[in-house]
Amino acid sequence: MSFRVSLLFLTMTVVVVCGQKRRLAKEEWNYRDGSERVSMRGVANLTQVLDDWRFDILNQVKGLLQHDHQSLLPDYSRIQPLSEALDDLYKEFNALKTHLGELTEKFGPLETFIDELKAKKASASAAPANPVRRRVIKKTPVVS
Image 1 (tube, rainbow, N blue to C red):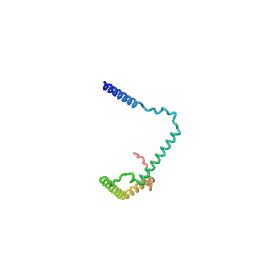
Image 2 (image 1 turned 135 degrees about the vertical axis):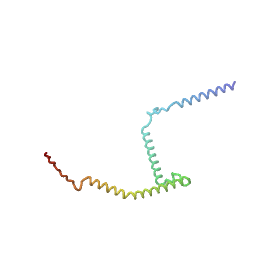
Image 3 (image 1 turned 90 degrees about the horizontal axis):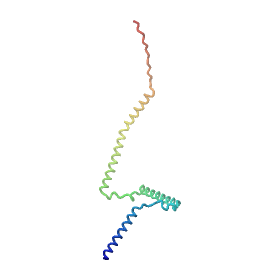
Image 4 (image 1 turned 120 degrees about the horizontal axis):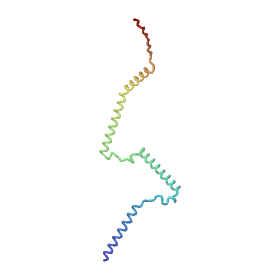
């Protein structure tokens, strides 16, 4: 009989605890509760402190990235395949940069020629050097 009573008591305890957990999970936090007691001066001070921290942290990270990036970024030389891939990428980038310089040199005279043609066309259309004079010939009536 005592086993049944203790089992019944244990079951009731489990049901009550589970029921209370569900009730707490469904309740939402009411942020308006107690809002009239909040010191706005304290909130403004806290906001200012957090803003100052954010500014300081961002400046420190920016300074580290600009001047001591090796302390923040991993050492890629320890990862051999990644190191080789970065090396290949660097070599390819430099080759493309060199090729772009060569193309720029080749197209230099062509750009000059095109600019000269545009200048000639603009000067020719703006004011003709020799104005064309036309003669008007009147027809004489034919008498028959």
